[in-house]
Length: 115
Image (cartoon, rainbow, N blue to C red; front, side, top):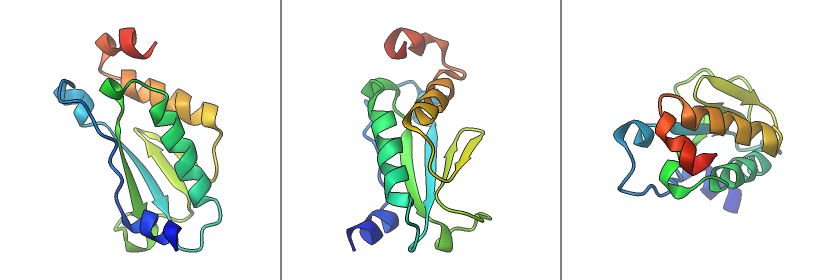
């Protein structure tokens, strides 16, 4: 029951108002499904990976119900971090590495905060 509320609710990681405009546009998407047995674990992995970074560089996280999405989603959980997609349950280290590359893309001055 709680998971269903989580799926419908779009969760936004708070960003500091001092963020550059290019960083505020960065978004991470998790597509989930009602009967998905790995979706809750995938959400926790991504949330923990995002929280490993300073708040100044954290991207926004959107949790989307794949059944209500206009995108062509064939399996859940599906995690989109920039151009990279993870289908299924990725490791924490894989997600953190993808986030690191995503955060630093087009934003070299952030390295002093996230490195």
